[in-house]
Image (cartoon, rainbow, N blue to C red; front, side, top):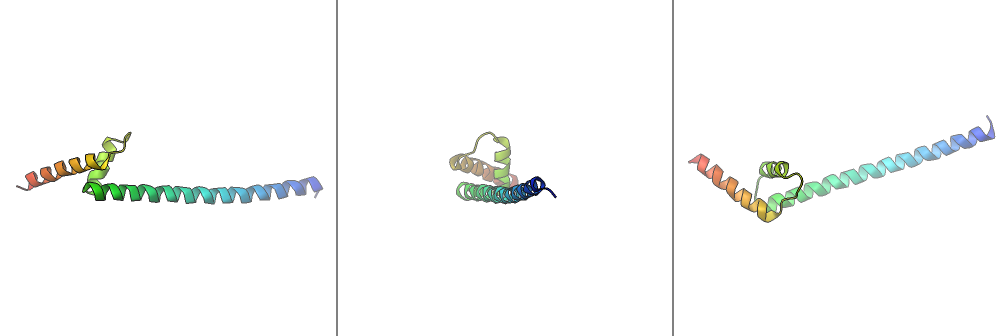
Length: 88
């Protein structure tokens, strides 16, 4: 093989290694984002006193905006009243 071909192969190997490292970094960041999103949802559920299902419904309704805990609490109270009325 020629010297030029050997250099190209070496460059290719380095780039493959860089791609593997980059893919690993991307996976780590994606996992961290998922964990952060999950923690945020759990905190919203905890502070608003709504069920995860109620929160999911709220988030689907307002996908463009993030509901604040006070709004979620008010909606949770409304859901609670509706559930209580249905049980009567």
